[in-house]
Each structure stands twice: as C-alpha cells, then as structure tokens.
Amino acid sequence: MVRDVGVQGTQVGSASGRRSRWGVTLASRLAGALFGVGFVSMIAATIVGLSAGQQLGGVTIDNSLTALRSSGSLDVAAQVGFYRSLAAQLATSPQAATAVREFSSALDELPSLSGSEYRSQRLQLLDAYEERYLEPLRDAGSALAVGDVVSDDPAAVY
Image (tube, rainbow, N blue to C red; front, side, top):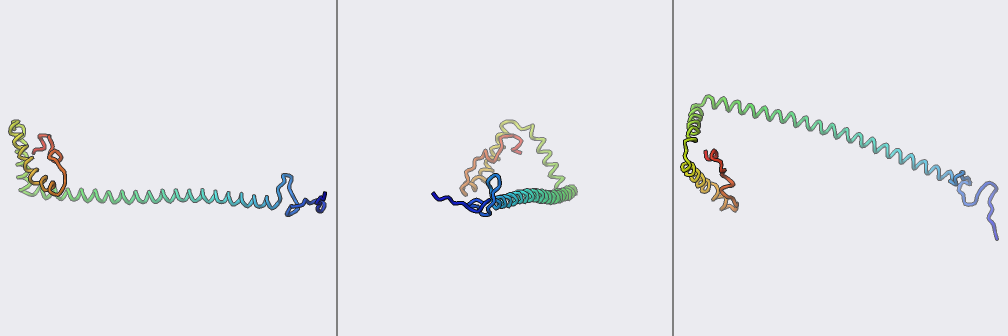
C-alpha cells in the first residue's frame, strides 16, 4: 500500500494548499465573492433601470395627455366659434326665419292628424325611402330592410 503524503501542513490536491475550516479554498471564496458582487450589482442596476423607466413613462404619458387636452380645447373652441358664426348668419337670414315659422306650423299640425292620415304619411315616407335609398343599396349588394332606416315612432315621420 502506497500512501501519498505531501509536504507537512498541506493536503494533496489543493491548489493553494490552504483550506478553511469549512473545506473551501481561498480561490473558491474569491470566486463566490465576485459572483455575489456581480449579482448584487445586476439587481441594483435592474432596480435603477425600472425606476427610471417608470419615471420616463410617467413623464411621457403626462406630456401626451397635456398635448391632447390642449388640442381638444382648441377643437372645442373652434366648434363653438363655428356655431356662433352660424347662429349669427341664421339670425340675419330671412330664409331661416321663414323656415322656422314653417317648421313651427308643421309641428302644430301633428296633434290634429288622425290615425289614417298618419298611416298614409308613413306609407308615403316608406315608399320614398324604399325608392330613393334602399333600392340602390340593394342593387349594390347591401341587405337592408325598411325597419333599419325608418323608426316606428310617429314623431320620426316628421
């Protein structure tokens, strides 16, 4: 039996010749320390990156919402200006005054219609829709019914 005995105080097979009391060499402890430092720095960089990303995303969203709000207010202001000018034009137009009077008198006629007069006017309206709108759409391949276009509400006839 041959026994391999090294120099006193060292063990055979150890790279540095020193082992700690847990049986780990200095090189292994150094490699573990480097791995730990690298892992901790990677975690720290990830946390910093996520935090910066959240802040950047928040700033981007705030800027986007601010731009939308300002453009929306400009759109509303433009529409209000359009309707103001339209109202001013209609207020000075004799044709608009005549149209309002005729519309008002037509509304006054509504309660005086009998059931047969209402049905007659509704049939006339349905025929006009059928001829003018639905037939060309059907010829183009669309499947529409009159009920898709005309309401059953008596007020819709006018």
